[in-house]
Image (cartoon, rainbow, N blue to C red; front, side, top):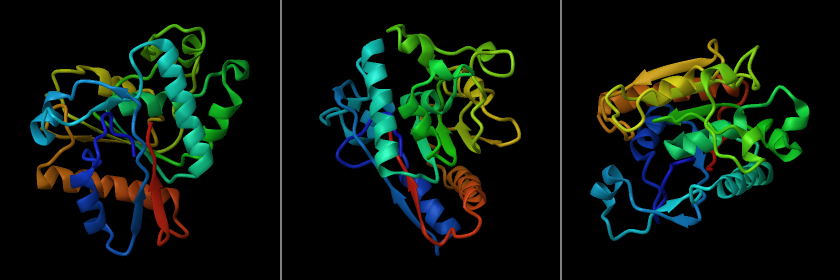
Amino acid sequence: MLPSWLTEKPHCPASLRYHLVRASPTSSYEFDFVEGGHPCPGHPAIAAVYGVQQTYLSYCDGSARSALAALDDLAAHVSENGPFDAIMGFSMGSLMAATLLLRPHEVTADRPEWAAARAMVRSAVFMCGIRPLASIELQQEMMEKLRGQDVGLHGRYNHINVPTVHIWSPSDPEILGESEALMKMCDKDKRVEILHTAGHAVPSDSVEAEAAAAKIHKMLVNVQPRDFSRRSQLPRS
């Protein structure tokens, strides 16, 4: 599971976890949470729920070197603990997950450990998604976000080719255009879009959360059609 900030108790997917269980009471979901390593201010929407006194953590400190280390950590975690039926990212977590899942056209621009981890992720859920970083530039200690033209047949990266669910709000004032841009970097035949009214947050309205959970559950069933009675695992960034 990939929320962008983690406290002692993972909070971002609580409503979705509830509705996932309701969508399939016979399925057993295992959520794999790993904390970030960099203290940071709590996002106002999260601090309003859990309090400003909590310790909030980010996956990187804003530098290219730190982001590269976080990407390496994510790849190592997936390789050591996978395979995973899905990887779920909220906000910055979605950026890290998408950065890993986007494969450069040039094999020499990829890292073997990233490629190995990428092959162990069967699907992805992006909540309040943010455009991924350019992993090619990241290896040169440059921090750049990918543009639409960077992905696709004539770009430098392949589309994310695993099934994806995109949960975002048109009323999110903080990342205008980001979620839609990320969605377009994913295979159009394998992506599903869910809009909600919660802004820069996970939908808590029961109708919206139930709709999102239903789409996630359907995707998970499709990526594991033969034996979905086993546990489903979801990691971090």
